[in-house]
Amino acid sequence: MNKEITTEILEEWLENVRPYAYDGQVADYIPALSRQNPEELAVAIHYIDGSSIHAGEIEATFTLQSITKVISLALALMDNGEDYVFDHVGMEPTGDPFHSIYRLEQLPSKPLNPMINAGALSVTHMIHGDTPDEKVGRLLSFVHEMTDDHTIGYNEEVAASEFETAFLNRSLLFYMKQHQIVTGSVEETLDAYTKQCAIEVNVPQLARIGALFANEGRDLDSGRQIIPKHFARICKTFMVTCGMYDASGSFAIKVGMPAKSGVSGSVVASLNGFGGIAVYGPSLDEKGNSVVGLRLLELLSNRYDLSIF
Image 1 (tube, rainbow, N blue to C red):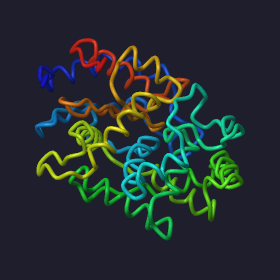
Image 2 (cartoon, rainbow, N blue to C red; image 1 turned 60 degrees about the horizontal axis):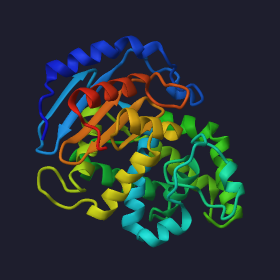
Image 3 (cartoon, rainbow, N blue to C red; image 1 turned 135 degrees about the vertical axis):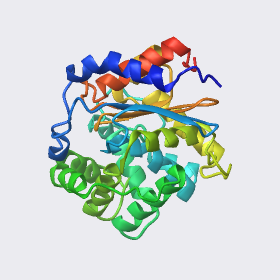
Image 4 (cartoon, rainbow, N blue to C red; image 1 turned 30 degrees about the vertical axis):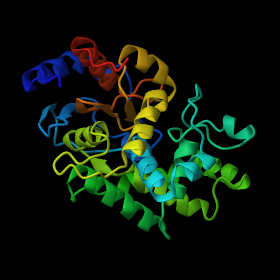
């Protein structure tokens, strides 16, 4: 395990990338996210031996947004099995934007993968629970297990803001309902999905989630298998092929880590035999990825040879 990286190095490198904080802009299509401070930056590494280091505004909390797509996929696989899940959502990457409806117009009209919005909505629909709150409650319990932290909840203001403005996601759901990819109430599925995206963490908590995936789904302290090894592998594979929206190919070349980003400005990476890395920087590039997060992960990967390729 490469443990050359120290807290002092993280602090220095975070300062080096700080000037990039204004190269993008915070997400403004979700009103509650538009108030994020671009200068609020943090990074954490959680090694698979349980030790951790961090730098920056580590107490700052943020909503997971699309990072929950990896977590909900793991739970849906555990609830339904691999065959059922991939009967309803594909496995292929796409060069289209994460909110695109275009591919749903082609046959078979199921989402290409679980990391785009259409696929994530379908996955949320598959999570067991009779009501949106039951689904979200099970997701939160799952996150509590992964982090060993039962204080984590979701941001009600962000969830409400997303729900009220989610017209495109409603369109995706109605289109999938027309083709029997999802059933039941569109509003209930969207309610669960927006609350799921609003689950709120800080970078040390997120780095631990990344480390659990890196540890083949096993708890870092007890060794208990929280996610079956095969399902953890599936999730990390999607992180490589689809985790950074339609910039996943260039990210694989420049950084080479299984990673997932969210439009709150958070990124989590998961490296077998190493651990989890989490970065938070709210300014986004044109693809929806954290400008500071991408730059910092690229620097760390190149300096410490962290690419899996």
